[in-house]
Length: 204
Image 1 (spheres, rainbow, N blue to C red):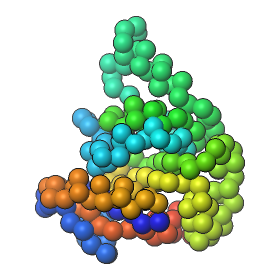
Image 2 (image 1 turned 90 degrees about the horizontal axis):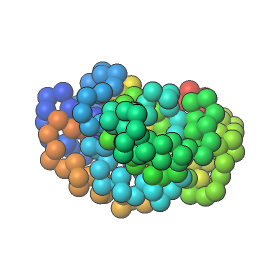
Image 3 (image 1 turned 135 degrees about the vertical axis):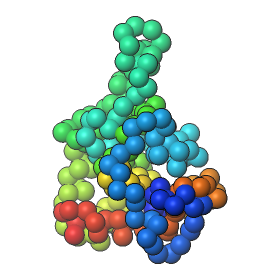
């Protein structure tokens, strides 16, 4: 599964595309971005309207999923939106949750850019079945095989400094490339799901 590796470029240069990950694509060292719109929402804006197509397995600490501040006020329209979003959570185990697509769409703009993995499911698999299959994969190749069979789209964030996206449909990646082309302050490099998996503890 092909993908893209996206970082904030420290020199403010325009986005670029490359077959290798150079110095400009290794990240800023920031832990997360918590002011204004998330990098996740900025980078993947063309894909956000598609999130509702899938159910998602989200692997992240709970604090990542921050909704707009106004939603946390008691009463009013914001509180109703928050309640509706929370109803989209189907299952939750520790730092894993299975959600309907509108949940990720609702939280995308204001989530914290920190360590996480988001998996768009191609079938009706439960949370326990997914996590058991994922962790049973003892090698990057086995994990890659599992994910390509069950996942249409994958996002991951590394230390708040690097976002990656991998997609079974190349058109989704091309939409992101076109969106980021020429964008200053963003560096883009080609990646693969296999390359990403080699960094994961438990699949090394």
